[in-house]
Amino acid sequence: MKLIKLAAFAAIAFTAPIFANDTIIPVSKETKDITTSLRDKAIKDDSAYEILKSLTTEVGARHPGTAGEKAGIEWGIKKLKALGFDKVYTEDVKMNGWVREVETAEILMPSYQKMVVTALGRSKSTPENGLEAEIVHFKSYADLEKSDDGSLKGKIAFISNRMERFKNGAGYGSANIARSKGHELAAQKGAEALLIRSIGTDDHRNPHTGATNVAMGYTAVPAVALSNPDADQLVRLMEYGHTPKIRLNIQTKDLGPIVTKNVIGEITGREFPDEVVVIGGHLDSWDLGTGAVDDGAGVAIGIATGAFIKNNVKVNPRRTIRVILWGAEELGLIGARAYAKARQADGTIENHIIGSESDFGAGPVYGLQSSDNISPNALHVVDTMAAIMGKLGVSRRSGNTSGGPDMIPLAALGVPAINLMQDGTDYFDLHHTPDDTFDKVNPEHMRQNLAVWTIFTFIAAEWPGSFR
Image (tube, rainbow, N blue to C red; front, side, top):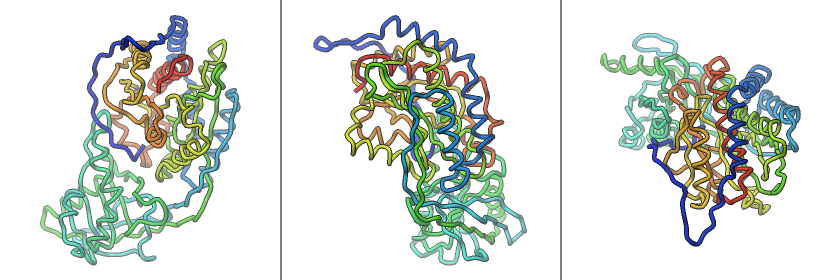
């Protein structure tokens, strides 16, 4: 979950629209009754939690181009088949692979200390034996912009901006520019490398990796994230009047062209099999942890939702439920872009009725938000979803949405979207770090997610009207 800017949302009340010349198709009492029954059963179901346990334990980290990623793809195929999905298949996604090999850093002057760092996605390597240079401190990306071009020759640019903690992750976008574009700006200013405070809210010595804005190849200069306590140490040294000199050794490898996959499972619609409701998460993860909250939880919630509906209704919903486990999200929505491009090319994009992705950890859902392009005649359906979710602590929320990072390419092509807003208060303590592990996940929260996602998915697939 990395390339979108999150914003704060205020709760507002919605009522069913009434149009003199349009037909409003109500959500039937039978559909509401079935959905309520599914909700009350799902809130006691641990299948999402158990699926996540399997993924993070039996597979682990799933960085694109690694053996772990291949194992994750095989796991996804087997899991979807074992849970009774009507159709399971994969689609190839072409990309350039990149992996980290060596990453060390030390303060040499004025006082020695080992620091904990990690290379940012697609960082280029330092010279083989590393580089030694003084740092030049900038409190923000904007401050680095103000420096003269070429003024940092022989130096390392250090951006110390700290990300702020919010329930909905609103501090991420403003802090993330240092990670995504800082390497280009540092190179423009003449720096030998870029060092940033981790884009995270924790106080542990666990640096947060993450993507830069490089689609292929390498960053302009070596780009490195520094744990928050180590960033604080550098700042304190400068407050004492010192100019720290550090040694940095980052070695990475370009794997060249590789093929990853989107893994897809479907519950075939009984009346409109060509119309699809899209849910899911991204199967890949960074290599530092086991990808539990980013985005193993979303993968597990998507799989569990499809399987739960399949196994707890007498007949399949009217529309097809398509669970997509997108590939290579962390390096730039690569699988999602390939999926959307393929649907645009084959003319089936119009068959995507509505969609949403779970990619904000494993916290409980507290809000339901819809995209601005949902038909006014369908807003009452979203309100009905929210009403049934109310018992689970979910309320209707305002604001536009793309439905999650991997939904962005589909939303850009006009696909309506829903955002099931999770409590991400501690999400940025964990994501992209070694602490992104299964033990951080609360089973009660996973049960609540399953119940909420079941409500959205079943009604969206069963209601006969159009969200477009």
